[in-house]
Image 1 (cartoon, rainbow, N blue to C red):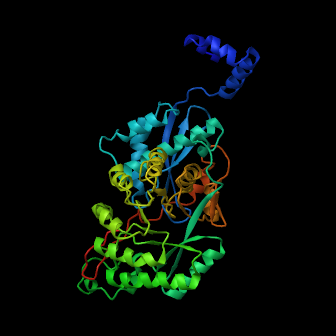
Image 2 (cartoon, rainbow, N blue to C red):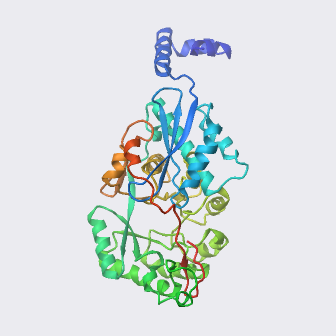
Image 3 (tube, helix red, strand yellow):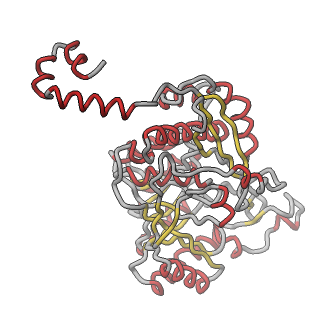
Length: 443
């Protein structure tokens, strides 16, 4: 039905004729016909997982094929610690669920796939669902001949401002690392004294002498870390100045009361944010933390479901939400999460580690480009092997992440190149960290 007939059908024919002359109407109808020509209803014919490891991390890419020859979409379902479980969930369950369904109705697909396992919100099924969801957005952009961010309303900025990681086993090494990042154009730098928790500062653990655990188990005690971290901030502020924004990741490795005291002490150094000061199991401590300090708080790397982030956002208990969007179920729920944050003054800082695929990083950046409440993005660099496997991956320049303007995510996958990089023999795990007496430390 053209516009004139539609207006007649709802009793507005005269108004339509008055507002759009016949010649203009015909031109409008022709533009509509030309724009929609070929956009016939498409069905999903196959959903499959592709595994590859060009930089060591175990990447899982989900490819959704359609009944239009050559048209497919790519999504990220990477779960580096349990990748093969995602592969099984995709190939054995989501493939059969999705076949024959429309590629156009992303919201309907997400809602029904989300509950197709009855129980939901786990990292395995969320990553599998994320891959399907992202691939459908990729197809949507390709059919519209637009980058995904244009489907959301276009750009709010020219590129995504990023922070980089600086580290060193002592203050001088760390200072040199920060200066290097600043010379590369980064205005935001995350500082860590060695690995998470500065484990190299801890004394020889007693659990090893007692034969508890296995030799590869790591060791970290709270007190050396709590003493060293304020001194680390003081040194970097004194040597690198006030113009660089400093971030730090606690990585949930200390007790809630220790986190409260630490953030109070760090307040004088004006951190841009302190990341994950509390474990997800201790969300109830956030009101106390917020009441004790004005240090900006970033939280959410380990979150999987809305029950973990809704209260923190709506009660204004955090300043940045940094969910790993594949763990949250994909692009569809993450854009809704960003909108929720906007109304409560919470900015985004999507988790963007090295064990997220270029497709996942692109999804982060497409959201970053569109949303008003963008805060900061974790930077990433890809080696030549990764770029061979994923042509069109985002690029970094002067501290900004840049996208190309190709339709969809703007990324393809070279499956022959991907096959040259099989998974490591280790199927994936997060190595244990223990206190001196052997007590497990949660990440």
